[in-house]
Image (cartoon, rainbow, N blue to C red; front, side):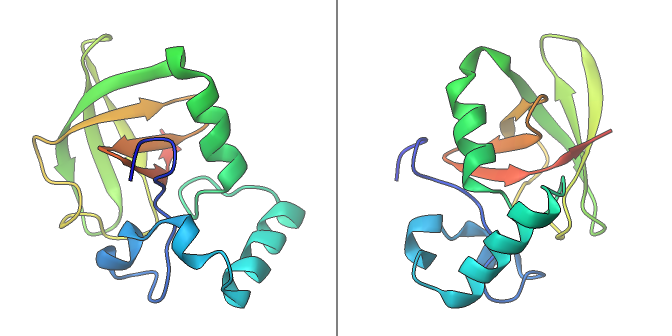
Length: 130
């Protein structure tokens, strides 16, 4: 899987971090996923929940807006604190799931502030940026 095709979209149990590591291509024919995507399109994108394919593509298309960071803390409540290398400051992100086992402290990540996307290697998450 490369950076353009990978995305973290919750499947199965949304509270199980292992389920966050599935890609959208593996679930394209899942009726539950299609219904959820339609609801997101009607209701708008909720930052910190499921990553919409348009959100992922918009972030990829604006590559100059990614910020490199290092994870300094994760909590069971979904808060992720990252150290922004360019700004020499910390940022607080939030995702609905417990990512303590998925995003370890010290992990290099990238944050797209305009579209609220966190890139962990080849995987992407929707995040709320505080």
